Structure formats: structure tokens, C-alpha cells
Length: 255
Image 1: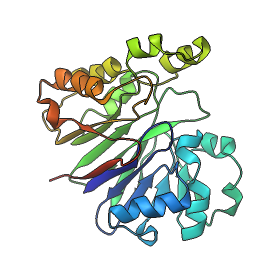
Image 2: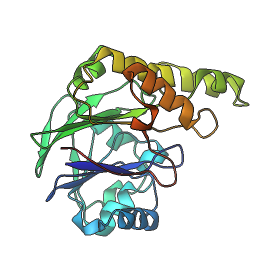
Image 3: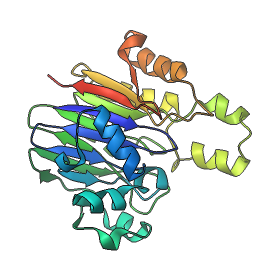
């Protein structure tokens, strides 16, 4: 099993998980044209995608979901709350499947486990993916780390982990105070040190990959996120991957 980011940040998010005959997209915050181009860089065609999972209804995660899925006949998986809150376009879907935020499902050769997260959306979830041998955990768009999140991500071989902002940079930014409070609140986004704290709560010896994701262009820097995670893991800084907004992250293989 392998995974790659097509782009990660406030301007759009999408991740692809590949287990051979099963290829899944997580979110689609880009236009159809951009998605085709980004998938092409990874040598994947849209026709190969088995399913498209959605975390929540915010535009940087869902903007291209319905057009992309409709164009290529891809089933979409999302919670009932996300479906209700989603913008126009869902009625044109060839297939829409509601997921239980506490129940697993099999899509081809991948077991997908949604789990709820505290974020200011209708029924937001994040996901883990397993091919029966290895397990990838993804956590972005979460304002805090709950005991359930730590429990779900305890046994992963790879983690894509939100490092949205640095507390000092956010405090010094020219963002309105209300927006600062939203971002830093319990239903906002994870700060670098919060992400690092998760790594101290779980077993990390089996980790093959750790990727910092959803970095704010204004309120964070890659070196700050990398330093926080590397310090928590007591590992070399160059072992930490960073998914960027424009180019995402190249394939990471799980062995």
C-alpha cells in the first residue's frame, strides 16, 4: 500500500491511497482539471479511482468532489451530516453512500475506518486505511486531540498529521481576533505542539512515515512543523515529510 498528497492547505486538499486494484481519494478540494493534472503527475488516471471519501463540507475539502465524481462515475462516501451541509451538486452524483462515523467499511481491498473529530463542521470525520497488513492514519481539521483520536491512531504504520499553525505566528498575524480564536479553538485546527503531543500519546516504533499536512501559509512554516514533530519522535528532521499546497507529497510506500 502507498499514499500521496495531491495538495494540502487552505486552498485545497486531496490524498490518494493505492492498494493495487483499489485506489481511493480522500477529499477533492480542487477543480476537475486540476485533479486530472495532479493525478497525472502520479501516473494515475481518474478512471482508476475506486471511491472518493469526504471528511467534511468545507470548500477546501469538498469544492471539486461532486463534479469530479460525476464526470468519472466515482461513488462518494460521506457522513449524513456532511451530505446535508454539502453545497449544490450532490444530486448529480452517480452514487452516494452514507458512512457511519463509528463504523468501518470495506472498499475493494481497503478497510476504511471513519472516526469523528472536533471541528466546526456538521459531522466531520477523518479516516484510517488498511490493506490487512499496513495501516495509514489521517488527521487534519481537528481543533484538539481527544482520547478516541489517540486510540484510533495508536497502531498506524504511517500518519498524515495536521500542523496547521504556530501559536506565536498566529497570535502576531493580522487575522481578525474572531478568526484567530476560531483557528486556535477546540473546534479549529491543530497547532504544531498539539500535533506533537499526539505522538507522545501513542506507540510510534512501527511508524514508517510521518507527514505534516494542512500547513497555513500565513501562520506556519515547514521548519517549525518539522521541528515540533521531530522533537516529539526524537528523530532526524529530514525523516519528517511535509505535504505542501501546490505539489502535495510524492508517493510514500508502506513495506
